[in-house]
Length: 625
Image 1 (tube, rainbow, N blue to C red):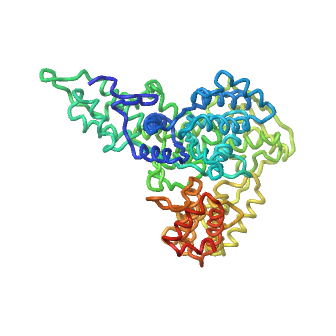
Image 2 (cartoon, rainbow, N blue to C red; image 1 turned 135 degrees about the vertical axis):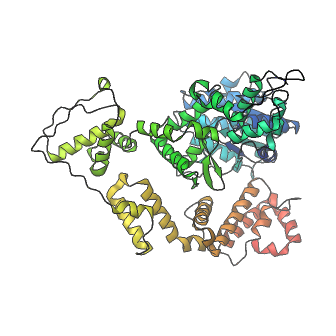
């Protein structure tokens, strides 16, 4: 068997024998073929680009024109106008349009328009006019736009606007976008005054199962005894992580000379092999880079890095934690270090658990100042004295600084003597404690005899308030106590307390959430609130809340189908009108369902389809009355 059977690093080429087809392959292909926007957002080296390579081949066989735009290649330190211009030029080139070789002239002639408006005009007036077949444009490395110097909210809002034009301009029904990258959907549109980016199907990539990956054993034939058993042991260590599974199989394959009748093979201990070839001295052996990529994503940002390390440490100690969908948990998942399994977060595999163990995490945590978030708040405030540490925070920060093993030759601040009032001394201590994480040390510090000691006070009730509800008092009283704490502490209000306050407010609003939709927030936000309530209450989730959640999901599903032109009388599939008909007239949500149905019925393109649907199901007449 050739030693290049496995593909380690980069996209797996077309027709490569080691490409593993997963459930996501058919989902991705079918969604795009049917004109639905998609995104594949996951950690690095999970096979996103390989999935697109295979899917693109299938789409082209269906006479769908495809283009891949690697957004990381458009440039980073460039202006907004140039970024859009390069994107425009690449699209012209990929589709070989009539203005090729004239791109600069076309773009400059419209300099009176914004860059995004020029891109919009190009798509509508040239791309969709010259390309008559369905089009799928894939934006790879979508996360690279998050590092640009200008806001890309307009870009994602434009993608959404292309989708929203479908009912009014049928050319846009032929245009579909997909996005690949290491990001979250919440990253796409940051402006709270704009609607969320909620028009795409989420394609989730899982690791290899033993059943999926059996063909990888072919590369171990004539290299090991019982190749399928060896593969199973590899997957037991990698958890099916695609890159690691391919890499370790490749390492085993290339380390074995092969055997025949005259050259019997020695058995291989997979655990020992992985320990020596991957885990031991992993920094020097990590090529192509994988483990260092995870480490760098964890540690590149000190504030989020510290929070992710603490979450990960909790998982290591407890085996798992509940997946609450928080931003910190999502960021931790995007490192690739943990995986979601039945609403729990667990360490992805045994290799990660051995490399990034408790000792490693504790060491890295000790390097990050425990008050890094407050330090950045202080810097961003213009070094406002009121943002300095005080009381228990100050005392703990000073203790942390004293425990650091910092070389005195690298010290930048030496404090020898201070003659200050109690208040000034407190400010200086606070300032120095904040500086501790930067590598500062206190070589000589003497408190003047007449200066009173700094008084450290704590509030023992805070942890109890923030960790559990006090059932000896009313729900309203619990909320009032937390609100008062929030008012007093302002920016210092602990994250855990904020979480507890939000949860109690959610419980307080149960009757309102379940009785009717909150029109002040989006439909998606209403659904998210009910789903969160369902997750927290489990079997205690009220029947009325379940009914409300189901009806809002029906409306959401119907809107999604309508945007793809599946309004009524669609052969062999459920349509939007039929779904809305499931909502009873007695429901508070019926009016919304009725207004949507009436809106579609007024559209000449759909009126006849709805009339035909009513012939088959006259009970739905209530929707347009």
